[in-house]
Image (cartoon, rainbow, N blue to C red; front, side, top):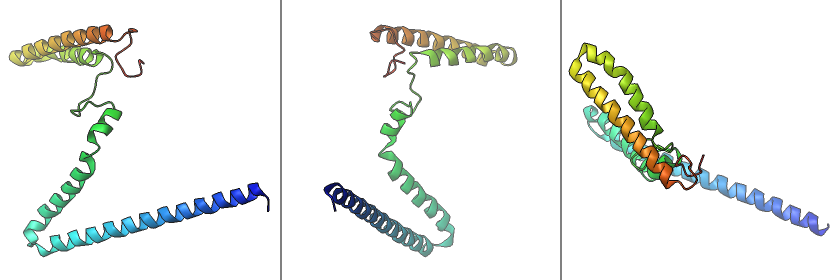
Amino acid sequence: MSRPEEEERALESEALFSARTQAGVAASLEARLEELADEMDEVIASCPPEERESLNDYAVSLIRERRYVAGVVAASTRQGLGEDGLPADPGGGRLSIGYGFLVLLVAPLLLLVFPPVGVLLGLAGGAMIVAGLISALVSRIATPHGGTGGEDGV
């Protein structure tokens, strides 16, 4: 057998070993999760019947909370959300301006039906537009090449 063939066989056996190891790890993790699920089921079943549903909901919420809390900030920033979970505005205030105009479109209709709410919506829409314009100007000044304020300048 030549040297390249030996190296190729070695790589194939290493890949096969790695795949088997990963499959074994995945199987052991799945087995552990099934054991934990059985333990949770036993604990829930040992409670009085009227408390089982609330305890089940609590267990599910604990799992979701612990699973998602660790990656919330990282995932939300990757999805265009700020650290507070609200949509980030990489457009330099355009989001606020757009919502402000939408609110201003609704304000006259509500002004006819219920004047105090219409006036407040008109003021809120105007404030959103002004805040969006200020945000757009600040991001335009802060961006050296006149971009939109996003990370990649698009």
